[in-house]
Amino acid sequence: MKKQPEPTKRTSGRPELLTLNMARTIADLVKRMPRERVPVTWANIVTHTKKKFGHEFHRTVLSQKSWDGRKLIAEAFDEAKSVQRRLHEQEAPKYTTASRAVLQRRVAELEARVLALGEALEVERARHYDEFMLFLSNRPPWPVLVERHAVAKKKG
Image (cartoon, rainbow, N blue to C red; front, side, top):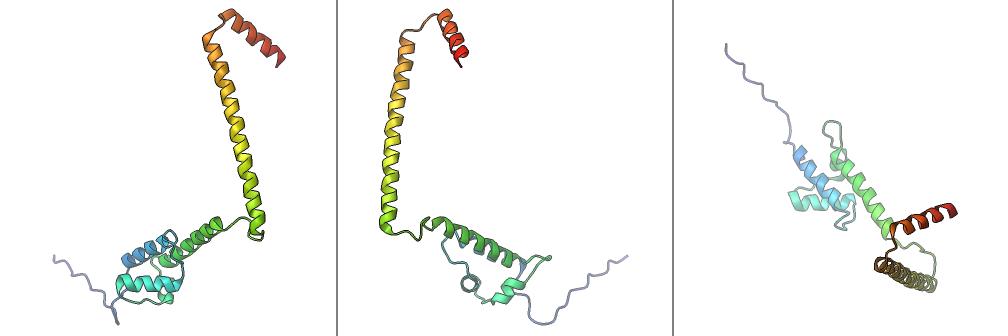
């Protein structure tokens, strides 16, 4: 029995330029854009794909083309856009309406508070260290330690 040759798929028109592999590459390029501080816009995507692949795909082709029911490039664009928004919100100043003098005064107050807390922490560390060294230098016998623990337990 002879095996029948597989029929070739004939399509009319130009060969497909935007393939699945190319779409995955473009999607990766789009996902990297926020990290590289490139604004995520369709114009930038078209420009970058033209530079990389030498063919200028229009926005509609990039956003509407789907494989297995998924629009890979459009999904990557939405994801990159949300990452870009999040990064922008994180980098934005907390008090945008306050004047510079008010913000500088608030920063000075917070820095003073940090210094005061740091000094208090150093004093507390030194006190604990002294107590620990005193404990190590003259350890009381076990019965005294047990008695102290029992008394502390009754108080607490």
